[in-house]
Length: 416
Image (cartoon, rainbow, N blue to C red; front, side):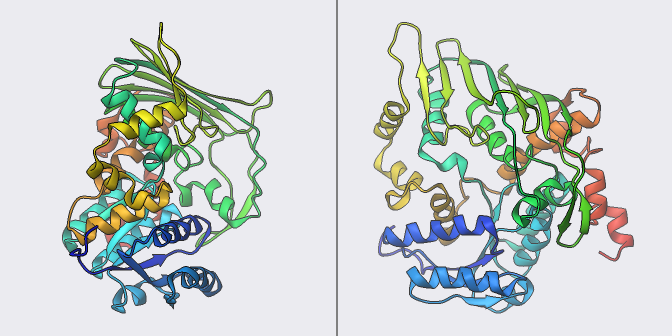
């Protein structure tokens, strides 16, 4: 962050829906902290009104208005941007990212990387062909509470060898399916599944951050909500078809076992509980929303010692950081996790380095979610994580890949 840094990166915001507002807030937080490492020079959305709204929000704090586009290829070829921050529904990740990469832009892509393993690998291949950086926009791991939890388990080893974990989320959901930002999340062909891959992408990344590589997964899913017709871009009116209950057992190569249960339809008392036990103690998730592990902090409990609350844990974590690490993990002293993921991408491009979470990292974390689906597709049979990652097990994903022209023979016959 010295005065000899490269020129500011010119950034295009692609997709101006709900999640893009969090990205714009991240831009604003960085700008307010005197970060001038990037300038937002373009916004792009099929909906011109949505693009105009985001452009106005950006201009209000940036002092200059981004150029407005309604077509990504036109935006990418215009020469007004060096990189794209893509905030689109999951099914459009591979199409938009590849278009941007093929036209010379670096790409920050909202989680989960691609809607399937094949889609994710196509994105990674496009980045390698183009010699451009692809980064996964996963904000949860960047929050102070989440970083402190990973430090506590992996570095400080405050709970000793991790042995078992149990996460239970049961709450009745009253999502308005007439609201476009929720409707597409309940259609497999657009979202890739339901909450297991939507919010579950955050959970999967943090689980692997905490406990390392996954060996195998067994999972059962069910859908209790009756199908409801919703209006979805590119699909028209289609019925909802995603899971609203699951129970998964995740086995890590270290020997750690984690059970993960969720429901948003079953009646009874709301339950939100996350506890991870090791030989020497336990760390308890106090997030409130356990699909985003430890964003709200966590407490450490050890026999014979006083419990360490979230504030104390974060203080110990921060005290452990060298100044260079603090500058990298919390640039410009910001703690907004969206701002941090954006800065990390910008800095990676400007200094030609690997981002904290690149495309391959994003592929691995989302594969944990897909392994759950693949196991459920096989009636709860355990599946090896490596087999799903390599594409050897793909029965659940195959209809999605077929629809979007991602199966090689069919893609060729379709003129792709």
